[in-house]
Amino acid sequence: MIEFAALQVFSMASYTLSAFHEPLIKVRFQERPNRFLVRGIDAQKQEYLAFLPNPGRLSELLLPDTCIYLIKKSPSQKERATDFTAIAVERDGVPVMLHTHLCNDMVEVLLKKQKVPGLEKASIVRREVKFGKSRFDFLLQDQAGEIYLEVKSCTLFGSGIAMFPDAVTERGTRHLMELAHLAETSQFRCCVLFVVQTDTARYFMPDYHTDPVFARTMVQTKDLLRYVPLPVAWNSDMSFTAGRKPLQIPWSYIQKENEDRGAYLLVLKLEKDSAVTIGALGTFTFKAGYYLYVGSALGNLSARIARHKRPLKRFHWHIDYLRQVAKTVDAFPIRSSGNIECALADALRPLYETPLPRFGSSDCTCRSHLFRSSSYPVHDAEFHTVLQRFRMQKPPENTLI
Image (cartoon, rainbow, N blue to C red; front, side):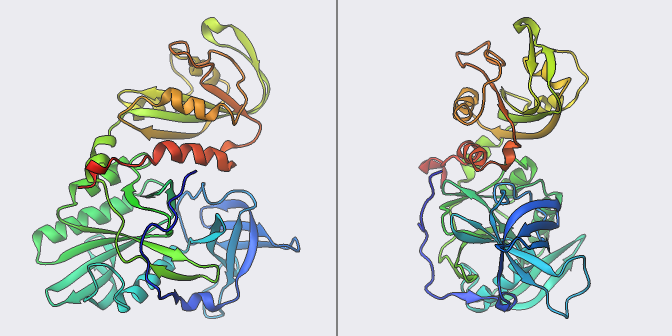
């Protein structure tokens, strides 16, 4: 994966949150029993169960044996199932902050130090401001009046692109709509600050592959709300510095690409060896394991993926026959105005087995659009490298206006 190395100009000053004054415990990630717990082991093979204050998918970060930073909770914190909290995960030797609750503490520091672009003259009136059905993170004040500020932590990045969210967020979409309504019907100014937890990104985009509704809402409200994607550079001691300028947002590119069309990756799990008749291709024995299928839809991409997830249907494509004996584990849409199906299959071919030639590729020259892995491919760093290569395309320069 090609990364942009510190393209953004960063402040020389670095800051540390008081929560990170506790000794850091480094463990190797083993599993995520649920959204808010992670399990890891240290160098002495001692096991730790830690609270993870981040509901995101994080699958490209929480890879097996990846280094996670933990802190022990203070005696004043309320009772919970574990005494430890996961605060960061290492990527390319650099920590990425995971603790979404502390993201607002970071922003408070940056606001007081006048390090948030466009809000240098704003002071904090209070935190946690209720409006409608939502609670926004800050109410600010400057010479022109009051400002509502909502903060989002962005941990999804690659190839010089940062994206948010990494999972569908109906709550996040509601925040944007209520802020836009507030801005339109009152004298208040409203701002959304995306704290991008890396210094390697040059562009910011809503993740329209994962949550097209959130992306569409961002585009629709861009003239009412001020969007500020601010990169942050992290050090090994969990001190941080902020970029002096926001990342660029290619609005016209986002609007063009966020359509219900493109390619997709379907991940299936076959529990046991099974003989399956695949239409005119004949009957074959598929070994137990995980299967990755590459397909595309020039329209109604969401409906196509939903169809694949249903076990009962009329058989039409090769994948329908395999789907009757295998269960769907994951589906990854890649929304695109171009035809990338064969290029995606080419990128996966060196990484995985090709169990059956001509599967899903009867209308092209590809050897196959079906691949097999003995282990769960979403736990492979190479899988995410390929996925991000196609999802995080560099926008053309003429879309940055």
